[in-house]
Length: 66
Image (cartoon, rainbow, N blue to C red; front, side):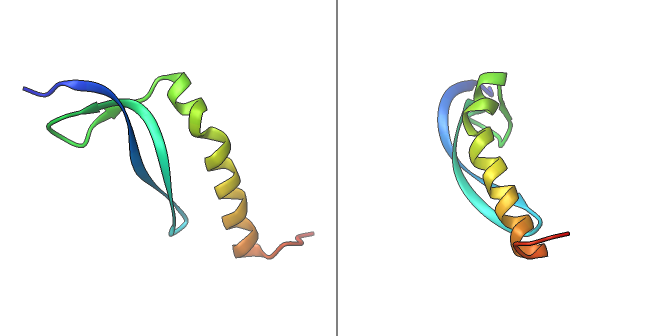
């Protein structure tokens, strides 16, 4: 029977073909790949993900953009 357990897992975040491994807190199923994230879990990695997205955009469009 599936059970969600509170854990921190290494998750690969993919954005526009670029990958970033993050340590994501949340509730993860011990049987399947499902997980649940609370607002606090999302906030724990939001800054890291936002910086990653910004760096990907800079690579795609160059550092200076008009």
